[in-house]
Image (cartoon, rainbow, N blue to C red; front, side):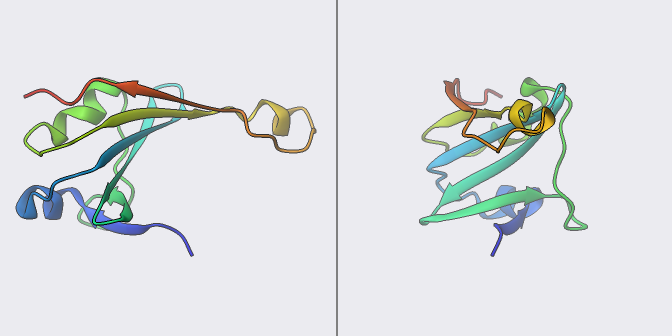
Length: 102
């Protein structure tokens, strides 16, 4: 089933209380953003439904500065095992980060 999607514009317009801002480090200098509120996780997209992609952690946090966010984390999942032909493992790191600032 995948994540539900919400546009960045919808988030800014409705300004929900966000329980968790999750920034996923996908590649060096490539970040995707998910938000959780009302017990639902959403992938943040642009107006065309494509994942919002950011080129740095600060750039990924900046659009969310006007929103009320309770917690923010950075998630990095290593593909090392997969790259060397080993079974996929849980090489996942989650780090609490500072909330976005205006």
